[in-house]
Amino acid sequence: MTDVVLRTEKLFKSFGALKATNDVSLDLRKGEIHALIGPNGAGKSTLIQQITGHLASDSGTVRLMNEDLSGVGPAERARKGLGRTFQISSLAMEHTVLQNAVLGALGKRGNVMSFFKPVMKDAQLVSAAKAALAQVGLAEFAATRTADLSHGQRRQLEVAVALTLEPKAFLMDEPMAGLGLEGAQQMIALLTKLRKEAPILLIEHDMDAVFALADRISVLVYGEVIATGTPEEIKVNPEIRRAYLGDEVPA
Amino acid sequence: MGWREMTRETLINVAALAVLLAVPLWALMADEPFIITLATRAAIFALAGVGLNLALGSGGLVSLGHAVFFGIGGYAMGILASHAQSYAPIMEAPFLIEGTKSMPMIWLAAMVTSALAALAIGALSLRTSGVYFIMITLAFGQMIYYFAISWPAYGGEDGLSIYVRNEFPRLNTLVPMQFFGLCFAILCLALLLMNAIHKSAFGLALSAARQNETRVLSVGMKPYHLRLVAFVISGAVTGLAGALFADLNRFVSPTMLSWQMSGEIIIFIIIGGVGRLFGPVIGAMIFILLEHTLGGLSEFWHVYLGALLLGIVLFAKGGVIGAFAGREKAHD
Image (spheres, each protein chain N blue to C red):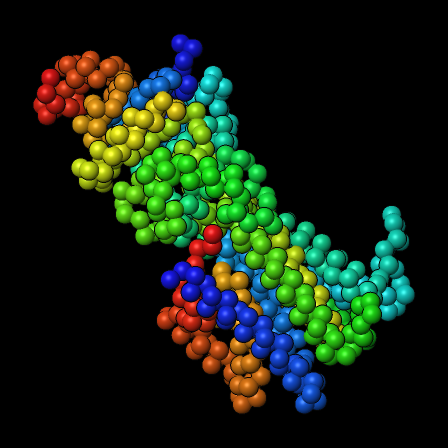
């Protein structure tokens, strides 16, 4: 139990009569990739937003390294070590790739109120940013305008920015979305390495990727976690096969 | 490709400053003091625009209330100078504040008061965004405009005249060229400051917040704080321009606080190029040029200004600088 990095306890969130998150308790342990799967509308993105603080929970707590994050805003949660990537790439499109990464490194440093020193000449920030870009394979695109990146490269940049924060836990909302076969394979290779730096809570629709990557899988249906287990356990769980996986997945 | 674009924009910038400096120098030799006054007006308007451009261009905050800061700067000058003129202190209790004719003191007062006003207005307005932000800044502007009209102590609707221009050490500010030089120097300093801010950590974060608020939040920064700081700096610079403008005319009136004034400052920026360092400089120069040449031909010169704006908005979104220098190069 000591290696739990991130934990949600009895999280609830309703939108009117709709229970988007219903009593969700799960944890993310050191060194693992914990995948969150479930049909569309199961409440995966709502849950991520509750964890990052973009959405206030009706009740329940989120703990990072056993610290209660209740009442802590999204900016502080990011500083405390939640590194997030978005379902739809969320980057400063007019900035260069390197500038986006430097922005992350700047967020890590915490002091933005510096008005006179050219930020792109700050060796410490730039080298942290470049290291993150190299790690995701975007080093040669440092000077490219972000809007000119391909879709897959933007996904990689999202991961790089999260890396510059040196987070304690990654929250990744469909990092494979819209990637081709080759792109998805690159991303899988990247995430495999990444889990050693910080555990990843991964939302993903690509079942091949989930079963290739995940150490544990939780299945979310109508806002409720109906099962948590290793990929093998999930694959053979008949209830899950009926509710969600269908017969596509070989047992 | 990148550095060539950069050079072209830099060339345009240098050319703009050179023209702004050359015109009054020529006027001095041709003995045309009125032209020097026009150039001074352009430099002051440019400064007001440089202030707003930090909020509007970098921050994406369309403030339709920047005349408040322009006017507060103007009234800071008017009130301090009028008390110095009449030898009556502004207040005696709890501590003595006397009027002054010293420009540096007046500038300081203008910047501090307009920064405080920007802090108050920004703290409330920045909780909204988009159209609501525009409307709330407009509402604050109108509120203060009508307050100035109905406040009789400093001339109300008629405004406040100052008989002699204020003083700057070692200069005779009544000589048009010397006062122009002062305004031009301040404009250059403001441009240097904005250039530094643009390249700083704060500038990077501010402009990222304009492009993508969620991104900035998720790297642990608060867009609200970034915008508020930008708004305060922006208000202070525009307030300084207001103090200079009042000194140029030796007169301050509620017109400086009107929403039309706010609109004009935005127009400088749009003509020159939103978010471009020298956008407001080129915009203000073109504005003054049109006002002077077309204003002589017809009272309705604003029609032509309108046509120009329409053309820019429709066909050249980057303004004059964008049209000649292309897309802004991301700095590195």
